[in-house]
Length: 203
Image (cartoon, rainbow, N blue to C red; front, top):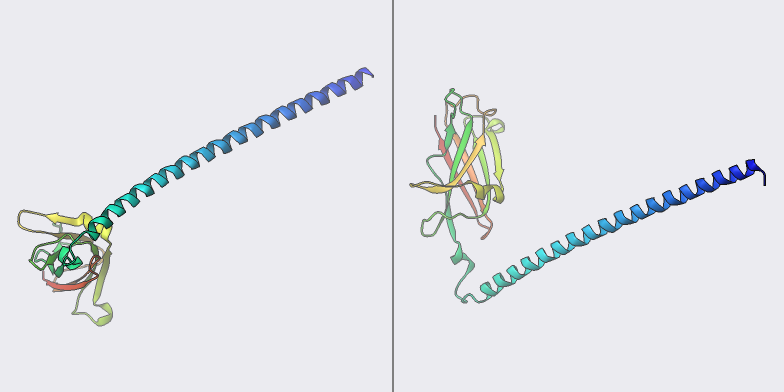
């Protein structure tokens, strides 16, 4: 074998070794990555399974309690709304005293048959109307408050307890110089009852 051929063979052999080594390392690294990802997925699934088991046990306990209730106990007696009241504090407010009323605050009290305020879960639909305008322009604004947001707005003082809902009307009210009407629809999620209430607010 000639020297030139020997050198060429040595170069090719070296290249082959490098290629094999590199491919082997990449394959090993890829295998390790897949293995790590698989372990992470298994751990996540295990954690979710444990959470589901815990929730299932809690539901079983709740079911046992409800099953053991006396027959004369009805769902309505546990939580019986008879009225939803909009209190007198419901109005437009000028917080920064610049002469522009930018905030509508609606105070709502869900009441049971004893007249006590109840932190009932549900949705509230609020509408602000100017009934002096034509039908197509009478509705100024409307909002919907979902249960998760509603429960954050339970508001208690020494004198009263209710839901306190705040809405931005800075871009909807140019002037507050005539009576407006606030309408609220409360849907009780426990009983499915729907309550409607409205109040006229004056400048």
